[in-house]
Length: 280
Image (tube, rainbow, N blue to C red; front, side, top):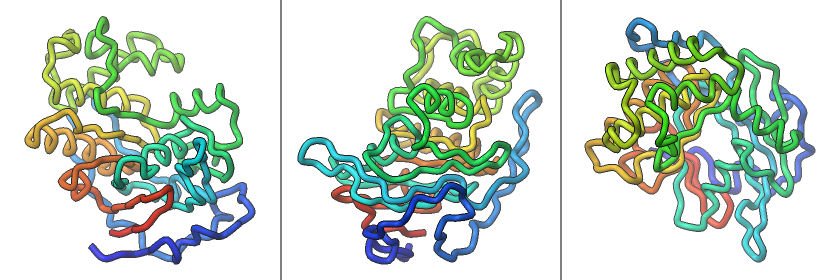
């Protein structure tokens, strides 16, 4: 891969006035990624997103300080619709703080994050209070974590259906959609199994189904293969990419694994709270 932007060329030290719409952003000229063909989905699986804005998520001037540590130091970043992005860096570099700030889990000390419209209006994530950020995460963002964080007392299909039910979808419809996603990820017939009855890779695929069931604009994955062996990691990454990029959604993966990062179309390296490499 060749480096597209370095810290100096991406405007990391610029003190821009935060824009209010994506079209007001100062985007660096670049060609959009080649569209990936949508895979054939089994009966009951969700359909692909047809279109969306060129920029799915845009950040300007993000800073976050924890005591003497500047976890984010003026980060500027655009994430495009339909691209897969790996974020890497040493421990303490700020990569997880960046993911949490982009997704609205953590509010920055300063800076702006905008989520592109697509099927919805543009929204300034950093302009929302904690309750409205939580609603935004339920409705428009998906999450996959290292341990899956499934509810052990619920079945696989109930785990997938739960976020839909929290958004007001009736249980029968939520479970129908959940079963469709499980089938699309190779878990047909396992709907009634609880997490303890599934392998590590199967649990992560249930977590992916849960993240995708609400058809989010962006899916964030924090070390999604960190607890898996190499073969299972490859299977999980296949599932993540097929269920996001192939359907026109954006995937953001924080990882320490070079093999996982190599599966993504774009690599962002973070050090000392700043982007030191942005390569395709």
